[in-house]
Length: 262
Image (cartoon, rainbow, N blue to C red; front, side, top):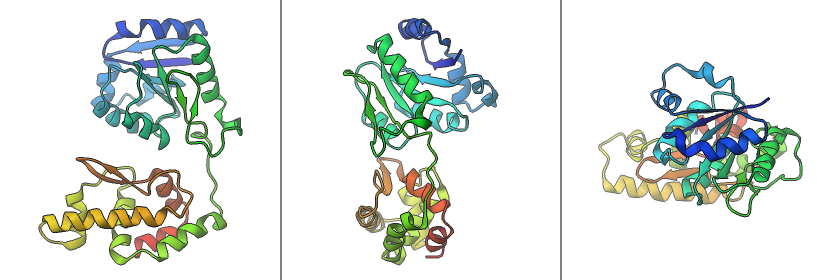
C-alpha cells in the first residue's frame, strides 16, 4: 500500500480528498502539526521517508509553498499541489520548472485522481509525453509534469548550442550568470548582484542596467532548447537561474569553466 501525506492548516477541509484517496486503497495521513514543523525546518526529514506522495493543501499560501518545496525535494517523494478550482501563476511556474510534480483539484473524481497518481508512479517508463511541459489530466484542473523523475543525460552535441551562447555573452552578462550559478537554486536579490558587479553603493542606474542585461541574457538563450527562460525573475525578490540550465552547467566541466572564469 502506498502512503500519502496531506499537509494542511485545517484537517477538516481534507475529508473529501482523503475519502477519495482511501477509496483507491491509499493509506492517507493528514497533518497540520507536520506543516508547522516543516516550515520551522525542525529536523523531521526522516518522517517524510514513510510517504511516496505529499499533497500541499490549498489552505497553504504561496509564500509558505516556496518555503516547503525545497525542504520536501530533499526526499524521494512526489510533490502534489492541491487547489480549490484555479491554478495560480506561481503553481504553473513551479510545475513547469519541475519543482512540483502535479496539481490536483478538490473537484477531481476518484477516476482522475487514480490516473494522476498512477502516472506519477510510472513516470520513469512513460515516453508518450516527451517534450511536453505538462499534461492535462482533468477537464477541470489536474496537471502533471510527466518527465520530472527521469534523469537527463547531456551529450557534448547537446551542449554545443549552450557553448555558442556562452561564447557570445559579454563580461558583465557572464558575471551575472556566474553569480546566479554559485547561488544554485536560491534567489539572489538585485541589490546583491549590483554590488558584486560594480562594487559600490547600489543606485537606480545600476538597477536599470542590471534589468537590461538580464533581458539580453534571456534573449540569447532563446536560441537553445531550454523549456523556460534562462533566468527567472521573482518580482520583489530577485533573480534565480533556470533549474534546467543550472543542472546542465553543473554536469559539464566545459560549460562550468566558461561561466566561472568568464
